[in-house]
Length: 228
Image (cartoon, rainbow, N blue to C red):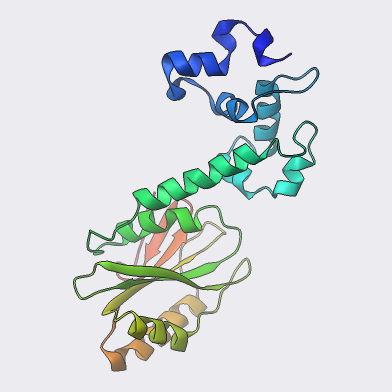
């Protein structure tokens, strides 16, 4: 069954025009991106089947390789590309919304919100540095290393050099724990101490080290786990 064969009240496009996008379910919004279904399967059915592959989660859907999605019945060719584009636009929207350039970074909650677009949903560890000026305003942020499921190794010399290049007066270290437990391990503690020691001769402050997980974070400055 195609969308045009459904009653007007069941058509996602018509309902969106009349009641707004917020009136539609996730599967219906995906169906609008897919535009049409296949023989015997509406766009809504196709979208629901695609969403089921990800356990109903858009975060999990964004993790599925494009080739795997395109291998699904009815999603071959370029059909799934609008969905991939929409997910990427959503990520970029969140990145713009969370920018803190005009607000001094003084709390780990700000760091957590800022880094959500970069780190949420990752299955491997990444280490990022947020470079700050003397007033604690963001100069830039940079991914300095990426690793496996349980570890990533940062290069203190590289971070110091980048901080000097940017004329940073302070920085915040951020890395994620894909396991979901944000508490730091012994290697996290060791690397934090090593970076602080490397920055000290240049009078650059390590303001915090925030360990990120999808629904919580740990702040070395506060030494507390916060649940999001």
